[in-house]
Every structure is written in structure tokens, then in C-alpha cells.
Length: 248
Image (tube, rainbow, N blue to C red; front, side, top):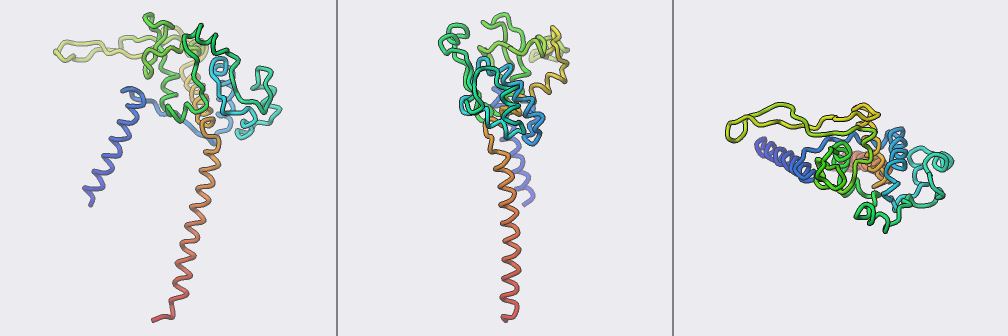
């Protein structure tokens, strides 16, 4: 029995590892510190989204008014997060024309409403931190988890410019030493590494919320339902005991 249980747990662990690698195209994904209970992080993430993402990407299935669920008032949303002539009841769409996007960027940037569900929070977190300089790429940028991405690194002023640098050596297949490469900051940005990681984490936290705004309420409701079912189970046991205690 113990052997069977250990085998099952090992299979589940291997399956999770393979899934994580598959989502990242063979790259180990960093764990995104998602916390949908952290309203301060969600609010910072919403600010990051409208300032840096909404210029090109839409979130057409999300309305500004839904941001009241992360602790903001409609006045705060209108004063701080609506940077166009949109209303609080409007969807979060970009002003970038699709034809202009095709001409300038060669493709229309995808809608980001459900990107956290399609890609996963860990993938997004690793993607935002995985840009590096690549002179062979059309945009001048590449990414560790999305090779040949057409998206330029719009946050490079914050993070700085990353490049592959030699971090040491290891024996190669033929026994000769080969270089071990890792990403390093080639040009510093306006944020420290820790600050940029926090920026990316807040943005991913908001994207995760946006992909399923009812997730927190659904989870809380589920806990209440399970608690009531558990209570009902013990009440049923007690009633059964009381009903049958005098029956021989």
C-alpha cells in the first residue's frame, strides 16, 4: 500500500513538472507570487496594466467598473485608471487601431483578458522577466519562454537591458569545457531587480484576477458550502445515533 502511494505521488510530481516545462517550452518557469487577497498588489497591478499594457493590448471582456472588486471606488477608477475618454461602464480597450498595429507591429497585439488562464500565471511572470537583447530579432529583443516573440521589451527602461553573459564553465559532451551562460543586466534600468520583480508580480496578480474576477468569491463560497456539508454530515450521524440507539 505504501509503495503504491509513493508511486502515485511520484507520478503526480513528474506530471506537474512536465506540465510546467511544456508551458514554458522546455524552460523552467518561475513561480508567480499570486495572492488575490492582496488588494494593494491588485491595485498596483491595475495601474501597471493601464500605463504599460493598455496602449497596445485590450481587455475587452473586462469593464473598468469591475475594478471596484479590488477595493477601488468608481471615482478612484475614473481619476487614476481611465487615461482616455472612456466611462467607468466601458470595457478596457486600447485606442490602437488594428490597421496601424499591423503596419507598425506586423500583427495585432492579442487581447489580455484571459491570458492568465490560457498561458498561466507562472508563464506570464517568467515572460515579463525573461526579455533579453537579440540583435538578430526584428524587434531587437527575444524572450526565454517565447522564442522569436514579436513583442518588444516595453519595460526595458524599468528592468534594464538583459543579455546572455558567461557565468562559468562545465564539461561538454566531448569532455572539453563549454561556457555556462545566464542572463545578466547589461544596462541598468530605473528599478532594482527586486523592484522590477515586484512590479511584474503585481501585474501578473492583476492579470490573474482579470481572467476570473469571481475566483475569490467562488473560493470563499466553496469553503462555506464545504463547511455546511461537513456540519450536516455530523448532524446526520448524531441523528442516526439518536434514532437507532434504542433499537436492538
